[in-house]
Length: 128
View: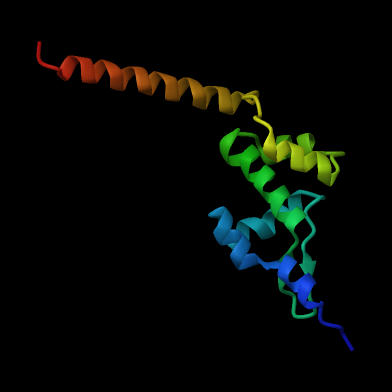
């Protein structure tokens, strides 16, 4: 007989759909990340449903930041997270992360160039 978690424990567990929605990602992305990041291990009940703890959600936020904001590849993000403990991961989610990946640097350069072009267009469109 499988014991159901207590009410206190159930409040701390979030189903994959809720976590995916809060991160604005499809659930299949979270399932794929489980195969790539060894730290990410949500609880799986007997009915094969995934439930995420708060530390899993914090890790997912860090992973999303590395991949979607900083421009790291999955392999590069795995290297950054290798050997980190949950308190270290919490610190990573809070601190500003320097733009260090080539992709992130290129993205920042393109954004800066776009701002300059928009400024020039506004200047040109303004009557004398």
